[in-house]
Structure formats: structure tokens, C-alpha cells
Image (tube, rainbow, N blue to C red; front, top):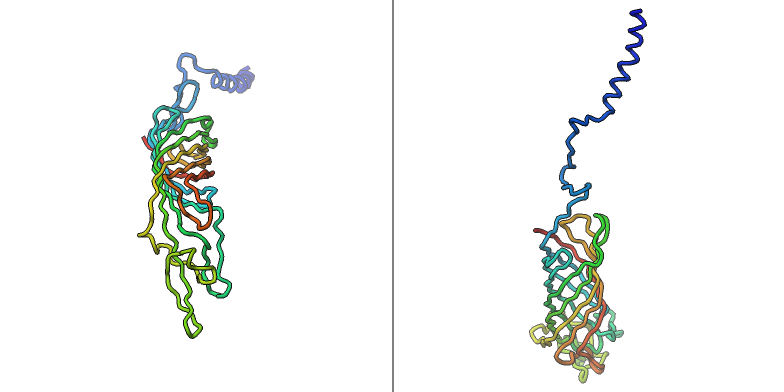
Length: 267
């Protein structure tokens, strides 16, 4: 009899213990804990922190075959709208600029025949970024549209070239001179002069610019910025800027641009 009771207990006691472990304790429910480093709202939604301040910088390129640098400071006005202040420095090339060399000399330097001035542009402006589609998760992309207006300063630096001068003994000497299409033919040009030659003779052309673009922010971390922006930019100046000789120059430049931006956010 005792032996049968012992065998029966071996089966009943483990079964009862397992059942007790699987049944929740209604009177003493376990405390819920949130994963470390995450705030929980409602049914487990992550609370996203709004970083109000942002500083980014980047490289830009545009359809006038120019490259440049961009620096921006932004601050949230609302949860989906930022006021942006930016500064840019770039240069603009005329589509008719063609690089060539003097074929009579093997070691001649490349130059742009007919180019009078190198045009550099400094832009200072302000505007807004507005969210179109919020980033669904850390690996997603947030899309914003960008509007900017501001001051644009054209800096036209005269082009200097190395000019050939033939001597009485049929040799040549070189002199660095400002390009004059009325004086020098392509056969008299040996090549370009140092870039900074003539910087002090630059002429300024004040104007304004406007920009409309789409910004795609794809950073994996909330406090970091990685973005690509593309759009259209218009520069208009007070007068025609003479970039090329014997060509129709302009005072309004309309082009497409792309900007790659990196930076940080903070409270």
C-alpha cells in the first residue's frame, strides 16, 4: 500500500508543480519593466526625442559644372518645420568653356580660350524645411521640401595667361598677362597662369538667389544627420557678368543642384 502511494506521488507532485508555475498569480502580478535606454508610451511605442537644433555641412555640385561648400544652421519652429540659415561658396562655369592647349609646345598648360573671368559665388540666405513624409523607423528616409532665398554675390576674377613673345633669335620668352581677346590669339598663349593671379582685381556683382529642393534624410541615429538634397537654384545679378569674350553673357543663372550633407543635432 505504501509502495503504491509513493509511486502515485512521484507522478502527481511534479504535475502539480508545473501547473502552479504556468498559472499567473492574479493577486501579485509581476511588475512590467522597459528595456534599458528606451521610454515606453501607451502600448510600447517609443517616445521620439525632438532635437531642436541642427548644424550640417556638405559638398554641392550643379549643372554649371561647378562644385562648392555648404554650411547650414537650423532650428525647429514646430515639430515638422525648421527655420534654416545657410552660407554657400561655389563657382559657375559657362557652358561654352572648352579646355585646350597650344599644340606647338609639348609642355604647354591647358587653358580656356576666350575666357575673360572666373566667376565665384557667395550665397547667404534663410528659409524653411517642411516635412512631407516622416521617417517610419531608424532605417527609413524622411522627406522634406526646402525653400531658400537670400543674397548672392558674384566675384569675377580676371583670367591671367602666360603669353609667348618671340625674340630676334627665334626663341621665346614668357610673361604673365591679363587675357585680352583683342591682342592675343591662341598661338600666342602658352598656358594658364597661377589661379590666384589677379585676385585683387576682382569685380563684385551683387544680386540675389532662390532655391527650391527636396531633402532626403537617412541617418540611422536621431542625433546625427545624413542627407541628400536636390533641386533648382536661381541666381540673378545687377548686371551682365562677362565670363566669355565674343559670347552672349548673362545676368541670370538657372541650374539644378545636388547637395550631400552631414552634421549633428542637439537640444
